[in-house]
Length: 332
Image 1 (cartoon, rainbow, N blue to C red):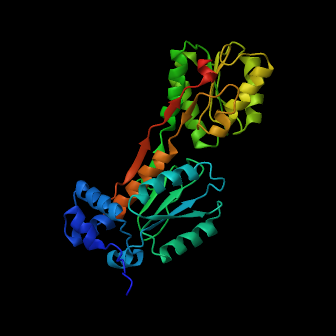
Image 2: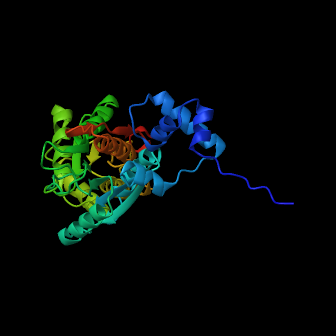
Image 3: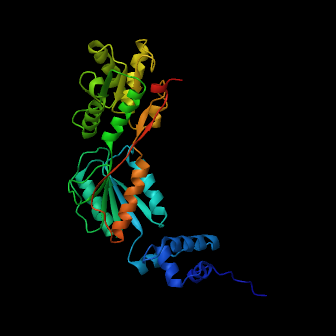
């Protein structure tokens, strides 16, 4: 007796279950065509229910797309690019698209090589990001590009940015609401745009409660410890310190504890980044600003998908941050 051959579910099976035509089912799964969102959802649910697996090669040939996106980054440590990548993957996976990560290590020649390689592989679009918020020169490729965190110098390009000014102001508003009256600011190198923006926003939001001038230095715990000595020599009355990063804030907390200054009893401290390695390990855990980089990655990927579909959104987009209150300002 011949064995029975079980056929894998096809696009017609998906269409029948969803109550649409085969061509509509194909468009819904490929992310093409002018379909209502409820139709796309119904088709995807039908495909998942019967275990339909699309032929990626056939899909690519039929649509003229590779369903692949490149991500170019200068952030070799992954401190900022990894959460952005995770958010982008969330958005891209909904359309069954893959992401290729390329780390340029701040080498222009390496970046040029990766761009040529990605274009040769016929990726549908490219996300460009980095470890700093300074503007960068746009890349010259014949496919859609969206910039994340590190904006393009061309205002016509789509760039998704963190609202650093709003984030810094939120820490000051939090401290003022707790009754703090003498607020100082310790941050990273003055040559870094993010340090300058956060310092300016802090002094503006604190107004008459701002103590002295911003203290610029390194993005390090060592600088945070040293800054406390500098600060207390000139402004011993300070009752709050906002910091440009969690690393600096952790150093500030350590030095204040060594000097028998209670945090937050005597001096409240805030950080910036919500880097869990620093913020949660600090003694006490840090009140800090989350830049919501995964959400930034999702928004970037969705804007790139729109551009790929022929509906770009030119210009910069600033996304809000989120204040995370913890024991360094609230106490136990």
